[in-house]
Image 1 (cartoon, helix red, strand yellow):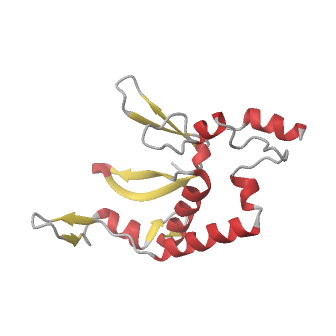
Image 2: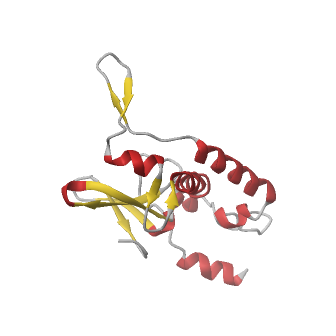
Length: 165
């Protein structure tokens, strides 16, 4: 109990401020989420996943979402769309998201869905080469990313403790 209280004081949450996301973990903490409940138990993403039903639900949905193919599309003036198979993001979203880490598109989508369900958000660093052409996506745990607003009210993403670029 005492160690949990000490750990919570050093815990970094994923989002400092996100006006587009009412499920902001910072607000959750402010309203008592992640704190001891009336029973005295702490409820957060780690303790919730220790419950078989929660783990199974997250695992099942992550697997289902991993199977859904992702493609870049172009909207047409007539309201339809066409798949952009020549777009640089096509192979990243459809085949291998990160050649250096050998992360398949399936595994990446599973991971993103898992992060969304347990943390409320998913983040990836887009590695580009000259000309801004994307060559890899580096997934990051949401607690390694801080979202803030700059002085002009633009969203700023700060990545911490990365193993990637």
